[in-house]
Length: 271
Image (cartoon, rainbow, N blue to C red; front, side, top):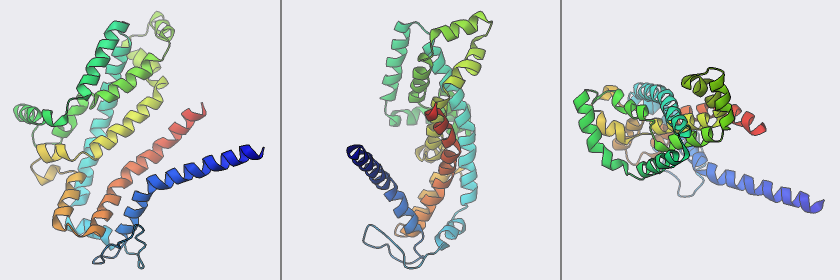
């Protein structure tokens, strides 16, 4: 009895320690953002300011049109994430319905594509976007979602759909369901945890993407939040409290999205 209590205590303590290790950079960033303007950062790891100030957060809005950049990021993610969910799940579902030898070939091809460095696609995409007329527009940032954004998302759905017993698909076909009905009414609801994971990962991908706006956007009208952070850094490389305030601001919406989707994760864990 005592040994089990001690074991649970040690496991609980280890979990708390791991949580603190992962949260320490975020906590440090929040405290650094609350340091009054003009105050140098402390030299220790724990920047507890003697006087708290929200002035850095208001300075962000004064220095750059961050509201417009924030809306652009929301537009990109709001369009790209649903498209990614649909196209990557379609591809994963199609792969799961192929004969096993064909499945293995497509999995290998997806892994090969994952190993291709992104830098090799920059010039090709630049020429393509200029040719079809979407260069310097929001669509230049959204169009990768039509291909599922990342082969990893396709493999996530493939694994989830393949775990569904084949008898479920066969029964649906006998009842007269077509491919889209099987995907939308049977496969996708069963793979809901995977779908939620893809939503979060793809949102983070488009929300934090810096290189694509830098390469394919040329006017301030379409700048995203990641570009705003770079502009603030160029204005004052040593103004770390301001930069930390901007970083905290950029984390708010992904954190809210996670809190909204968290109950779905908890519901699936209970099942």
